[in-house]
Each structure stands twice: as structure tokens, then as C-alpha cells.
Length: 542
Image 1 (tube, rainbow, N blue to C red):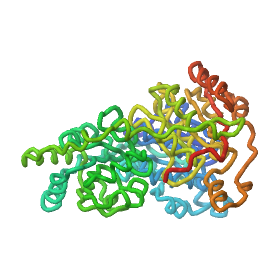
Image 2: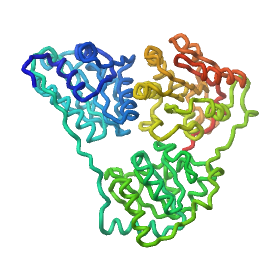
Image 3: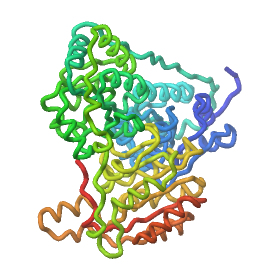
Image 4: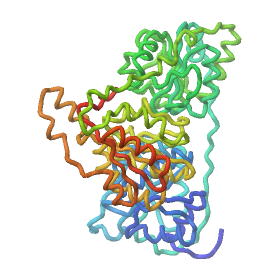
């Protein structure tokens, strides 16, 4: 510790750097601009300036997911924080470890127009809140916020009063260790019951969710020992890519053939999944089956579905342990995986271009071609909207850690921000974003130029059906005029070009060929606008 005096805004910036966090996302204002300035000019950190405050949270959340480390964002007070509410809910539900350094109005100026009760605002989002207690505790409070983010696996908002910033303190570097030894498999009746169900199964399926990404190889070893097919939840998409027994996504996103195969199973062994109702298809897929759930998070166990057995334990260690017991009891493999035609189970229906309106492209066939044309080492991100389920089923990524979907709050307009954050975390890899027209107007237009300024290798595919698709479908289903859900948007391709990128409009197969060539020759953020017939876009698979 040095006796040299420093200002609080400098101590906050240095405290972030003390943790090895060299990138910060944010938008500057009265309460955080000097902290950001010191972080960049004196500390050598990278500051990513956004156009809208919520974007900073989304970018940091994606950065944390891809880099597998705590990320930091910052905004100023009042409306800056309220503009982050949707993003904080998304990040909290995604269990992303990040810290939002939120400036606050001066303690001695409660009449400030931008004064609000930040704690109350943050609490409704599911994020954690931490008050900077005094100028002297600044570095400790930053370290505590980062520690809480790691341990609690959610965003922590640290309140920083503006009148602290120019007070002098002695900076002390503090980094609190996180103790994360994996939990062992419990002994006793729970384990005996789970192993007994697995050992007696004739047609088991091994399912993995995002909570089991680190246990991939051990889960595969268990599935091979059982001769059981492998499947994943949406968030763990492509975890088992390339394995001969990989059925793909389990649930409402399964192919019709895979759905039938799942229905025939008599046991599901689920690792790291909360068994959401999309995964279980409102519990329909679990009927007539023994379900064993393994999750290291006790709050996720039996949260969405009541399984027959639960082990609150580490996925990899539990998989190893189950294999040991199967060997010890000399349980024969089931042979179920060998009975299945995996190619048939993973083949999704193709589009029918004859039903597509003039001046539009068939969406499904365009996706099939994009799957082959997009860079193989891509990071795949998706926004929300009617278009997304076909993307999840038809566009692959190298592995589960290369996929981020903004699905946790059911919001649209979050995808481009996530794509930018992911790209900063992995600057040597191209990022592909699929978004809808409504989502791009809501959030993409705000930040596309941010990607241009950062010179990112970004490919944005806009599925433009000139409508809010989910609402359009509901009007049609009730034989009502869908006009209120339809829009005459500007040309997104022209907007992208005006914002400094390259935009290409696709209304025909020839123009799709042009877009494919542009993917190969891109040298700036590229936006491909697929003009779609709103009556030809497949329904969401939910």
C-alpha cells in the first residue's frame, strides 16, 4: 500500500484494473466521466462508448459469457440507470457475473432532478446492489462488488455518489479470492435412487444444459457407457456437435422425428439444466419417464419441473461416479443410441419457395444457404422475435460457448449489443447476429455504428418481414386485419451503409448470391437484409 494520496475516481478506476479487467463498457456522464478518463489515460484500459446506456450492460454481459470472467460497465445517474433495467433483467436471469459502476447524484443534493432510489430500481431486476459507503472504502467496495458478482453469478450494481469523486484517499489494492471447489456427489438414498433409475433404464437419453458445459467429455463418457443418445437444451446448443449420437436440441426445437424418439424414451438424465418448459414441452416430453436431474445450483433443481431424483452436485464428478457404479454393478449398455437414425433425427424440413411472395426470399432456404456460407469459426448471437427458432435449428456454431441468445427476458432489441460485446471478448473471431426488423429498429440502429467505429468483424442478418411477427400471427389466427402489426421500415441495407458499414438487400436468389460473395470479401461490418413475406415466415416452435 502506498501513502500517496489519490482521488476517489482514480481509486475506483485503479481498483478495476487491479483485477486485471482491461475493458470497460459504458456511457459517460457527470458522475463517472473522470473515473473513465483515468481508467483509459492513466491505466491504459479500453473504454467502449455506447450510444444507449442499456447497451453497456448487454455488451459487458456478452463479454463475460465469452471470456468466462467478470466484466464491468459504467453509467451515470438517474435516467442512465433506469435505461439499464431491461438489460439488467436479461443479465440477471442469464446468471452473468458482471459489475455495473453506477454514478449517483450527490448525497448532499437530494433535490437533484436525476435523484432516484437506485436500490429500489435495481432490486426489481434481480441484480444485486451495493452502496459505496465512504470515499475511504472505494477500492474495497469495488473489490467486494466483483467478488459478489463471481460468487452470486449475477450483475452487481455499485452506487458511486458524485460528491465522492474528488475527495482524496489512499488507494489500497484489494482482490478477494473466490473458492470454487466442485461439490462432490452426495451419498445415501438420493444417490442410490438416481443410480437405480439409470441402471434400470432401457431407452435413456442424456441431456445437458448450460450449467454442464465444463463437463462435456465426462457426460459423453457416461452416454457412451450407457449407449444413450445425447441432447442439449437451447442454451447448450452444439455442445455435442460432431458426436455420432448427438440428437441436437431437446424439446420444442427438436425435429418431428427426434420428438417421437424422445417420446419413446423411458429415462432422461439431465445435467446442468433447469428443465424449462420449452425443454420439456410443458412437461409433455417427460410423461412416462424417470427423470434424474443433476445440478450444482440447488435453486435450479426442481425449479421448473419435479424430477424423480435430484443430485445437487458437480456435473462432471457425478457423471464419473455414475459410470463407476454402472461398472461396479456390471450393468449392460442399453443399445438405445444404436437403434436411432441420427441423420433422420436431426434433419429439419426444407422450405417451399413456391409459397413465397414476389420480391421476397424464402426464409428457410436462405438459412440453409447461409449455414454453409457463414464463417465456420463464428460466434453466433441471436435477438428475439418470430424468426429466431428457425435460426437456432438451422444455423450451427463450433461449440456451446460460441452461442449467445438473448432469450432470458423475452425481449427484442438486445441482439446487436450482445454481438458487439462477444466480438470484443474474442477479437480474432467473426460474430454473426440474426435479428428481426423490429429488434433492429429498437436496439440495432442505436449501436451498429459502434461496431463500425470498433472495426469489428460482424455480420448482421436482418430477417425483415415488415411486421411484428408474433402479433401478426395472432391477428391472422383470429381472422383479423394484421395491418397494425405491419410497418413500412426504411431500407436497413441503406441504413447500414449510411452508418459506415456495408448493407446488402436480398429479395431474390441472385441477390442472395451477391450477399454470399460479400461475406467472403467483407472488410467492415456487413448487414444482409432478407426481405421476407410475413405470411411465409414459419411460426415459432414453442
